Amino acid sequence: DALKAAWLLGISTGPYEGKEYALTTQRVTIGRSQQNDISLFREEYLPDNVGALVFQNDAWHWQGAPVVINGVATTQA
Figure (tube, rainbow, N blue to C red):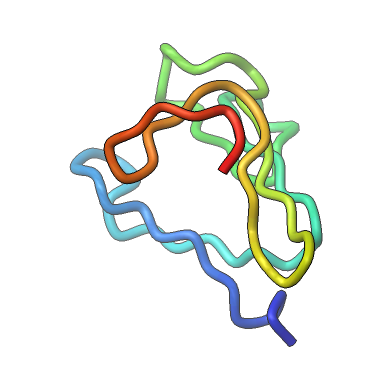
């Protein structure tokens, strides 16, 4: 049930602002390549595969290149 209710919402300004992504599997890949579950092809600075959101122990976790979460750069959160 948690997977059905999980969404990723784009909040920064730009082409992805307000866009919602349903997280429907336990591993959701993210990057510039269209091979990813969430393709951010307009972000030229991103690698083809930047990382993944993984559902473990009843929570979503980031695994991949550093991202800023609550003002802190991290590779796993």
